[in-house]
Length: 127
Image (cartoon, rainbow, N blue to C red; front, side):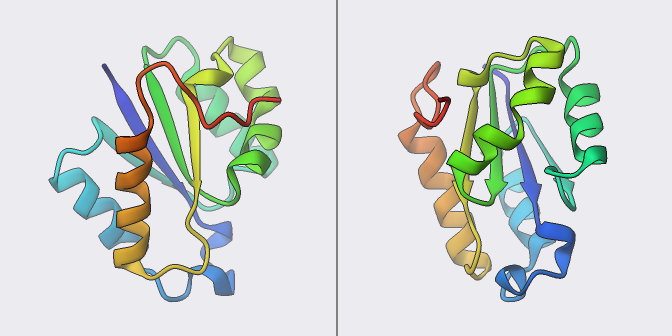
């Protein structure tokens, strides 16, 4: 099962990410092999974020896409168009809100998300 993580950090200037070392979050999860791959985008909800998601997911064989950033329900709404554009099933997306967390709390929240997400189930926010 191929699972990837995208970290979205509201341009890196949002106060809700100031206590977090975003590169350390990615490196810990990468080193511990929690994911097959990790990536970073400054603002997935922007127009270029849509392009990024479409290009990343077009023809990709990804079983589960985790996105750590804002509220998962908001992610589901924001990513609907790029997912539909490339035929990426929305139920393969699972999100977690990591705003206002420090590095350790963010890593723990992401790990819990993976542990609590059985294969084939999303965050329940696909409506």
